Image (cartoon, rainbow, N blue to C red):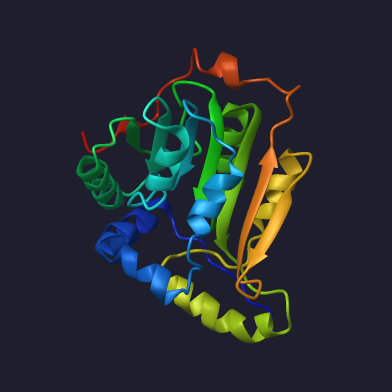
Length: 238
């Protein structure tokens, strides 16, 4: 039997995540996310104090603390999400922690243009929810400065024969919760735009972190794009 995934439109995804926003803390437990996996992903960015970093699909801001620890008060953190409900939770988190160097934007990540070249790009449990995720990856890669890293952390189907048994349940669960497509392989798509991709698997091959570094000789668009282009987004929750 062949299983397929039917992508939802952007408005459906937005409405679903607006409804899910109050319950996001429960999902790490529901899906048995390994403890500290987000911080490991942030460590893979190899950020320095004062760096700028983008989180694609930042949600309620679960990655903000390790990102803030990495770049410090002088760094810049940009969070992009299409769900205003999620962004309201993220802003509340920033206010509670007095993080003044985090800017939140309500927009499609494929259209986002940061105000400066990026030292790192993080996709934490978000890329599987984006039907046009390849466009999102390419756009973010163009804004990444040479020597910067792009890191994806997410769930995946295990490569063992058990995956075939889990697939029907995985499709049903994603359809009724996170709308994340379990059939895509973002690490392969990242390899199409990057020279080398590192892959690390966790919890019996059900979670992964993959990363790629932009070659230092490739500075094609990050600096020039920062000076132009229409802003197809708005600052969120301000």
